Image (cartoon, rainbow, N blue to C red; front, side, top):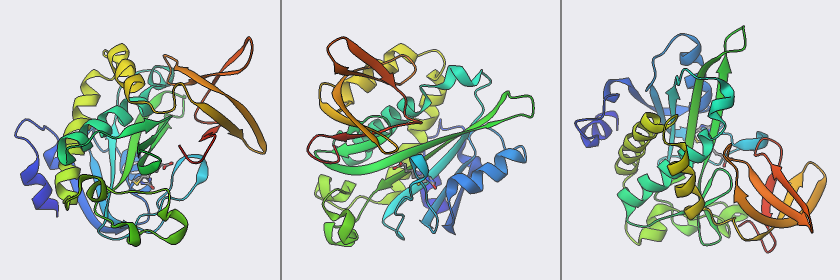
Length: 265
Ligand code: BTN
């Protein structure tokens, strides 16, 4: 797999030597965190064929079955203040939507903040994690992505079947994980090149793909659920929600999750 992916990477991809494939890992994000703390360079990327402890946002687990998905994490060292990276998950979501479009020929939507979706079903998710120096400066950012690649509907566990889909299901043909992984790595490198300078254009691309905007949503914060209408994405990647006449607030992805009024999207 390692060699197959390396062969598919374009010649101008500069991080080809920094990529490692493992058959099984607990979590590619956790593994990469250890490398990051030991000084691994920007562009180091870890992919696993199977994760025993894949996780998502807000402490949720991420179903990562063997051979059917792409589970990939990449290390960035943007050299900026953490507050200048608030939009990182949005940038990664746009990059991943473009990678799927390139490798599979269809354009997934983005459910704020970090899910790739097609119709009412989840195609993949993104977990970004930051690391800091003892003085509180940003040391690294890890972007971890899981995309369902070649599952058939019956391959998903029953509890996920109605709300999950894969690239192969949507494309109507088998999509090889190595092809998708190569497109993801390339797109992540491109994203890293404009992360600090191309924020406005990226946010516009995010807005145009975001299926949450304009919808009635339930904002879930712990036990509390409030209904509102999703209006816009803020410059920091927050969601602007109108909860009632004159009550417009920004909600941030670290604290809340969003449900559509009639299901997951
Ligand atoms: C979510 O759906 O909330 C985000 C899911 C992110 C899953 C990916 S798979 C690769 C990387 N390793 C992990 O443990 N999580 C991310």
